[in-house]
Image (cartoon, rainbow, N blue to C red; front, top):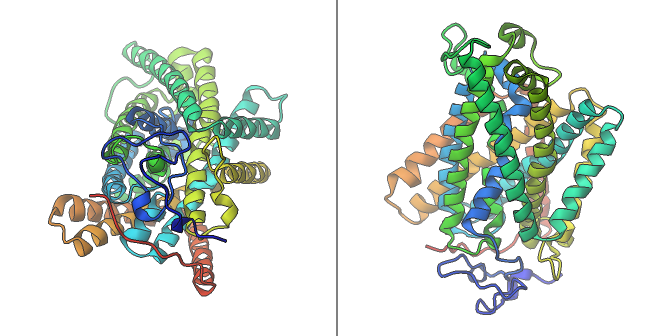
Length: 481
């Protein structure tokens, strides 16, 4: 098999297949020894919308009850701390995306910022997030739709969501970007309706009225409790990092990747805190929810019913199903396929995954593989009572573990290698981000820790095999300044 890194393409021709030439200062992969195969067509706005859709502005709707219980009712505080932790991570992503403006996310950054074996492990751990998250999203959406229309089985909904998203992604990243904008507007409209009706209801005496218990409750507060809840709430924030996988489809400056991640995180985090604060004050029986949990996953919809009645409850439930099963899954599938493409291009995964469609300019085989895995895994998880919980904890553990290596890569690349004296961005930020994430991982569910470490051991074994069989790529550790 020929090494794709040995074939150079002319930057002037823009080998994206559409004749697109990156703007002045835009990231170019040719200087790193790669051909420009993906189509450069995404603007800053496209990247921002992509990140917001990936995170889902109404993401707390689906996991509100679990976070409420885990945090002792301080659900807004859990999201605030989660947002802070992700802010440090976004800053580290921003620095590494400028240094290495290529697809691959933390696989690329850790591999070039530290060493290729570390990059492989970072990519392997983030795969636990990226490969599993589409299946999780499809499963949640299918179950939600089945609860609304019981006559249609969960498996039928699951297949429908997978096929629909695969077709949209097959038509190319530009088509996906247009769909993203439509879905984002719809989600924001539903959220605005809930917030307006919820605030009016609270002002009218419904619920518990306005207070600060969702942000701090002296009767239940403890660091361990809140950080345990953060390990669940962080699921809502995952997705801003997916913007980095589109680096080779970004038509603007390499700085746009980092700016889009930070902007998307800030906007989504604000929306998460506001909506969970309002919903927490509308929960019909908070003590019971904390004691017994939310097995049915309807806590947010119950709160919506208190504010506006059954119609608002149904609206938020349907919006959750569409947002998770279509909008979020759509971008998750796109991001995962780009990560698989990047690792296959470096011979760290089977070569067929680096196949790019000649006219659509998308990693077609990787896209189809993600669809197949999501369908099979989603079907299997429908047979387990703990399917959603198990997938959620594994997704979070994989992402947070990879983020830890991301922070290390910033310090090693900039401070150790480049001798940077920007102590805030290149030392303080990654160290603080690392410390917060370590505490979150320690307080994560034991099941997630055990299965996550099993996945890590499998990755270490696979890495040893790749090195032993001569599949370790030679990577030039250069960067765009």
